[in-house]
Image (cartoon, rainbow, N blue to C red):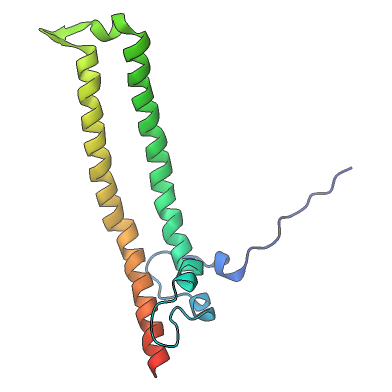
Length: 144
């Protein structure tokens, strides 16, 4: 007979909710983000919940997009290697399916770059600015 076990509670910093509009979390002040000289403490910044949130947002975009593109690219490569008849089919004039697939690779790459730039501007840059503000505020507090 097995008992239902609940996983251990996450640390307080992991329970904080971020809607992107609130100010710094109370947990951010648990460990100074700057050393005594006012220089950034990169290990403390990396351990902060804000930095973890930034990394999570980046991974939630990059990994799925990479997987989708690799699947698309491998489909093209497999059709090129094993689907010669399909890739040779003429679409119009001298343009065949293989040529369209090859050109679609360029269009897909450009689309991913543009999508990432928009995503970074909307979701990553504000979080990065927030981390910079926390470090600046911590440095100013350390000078007082």
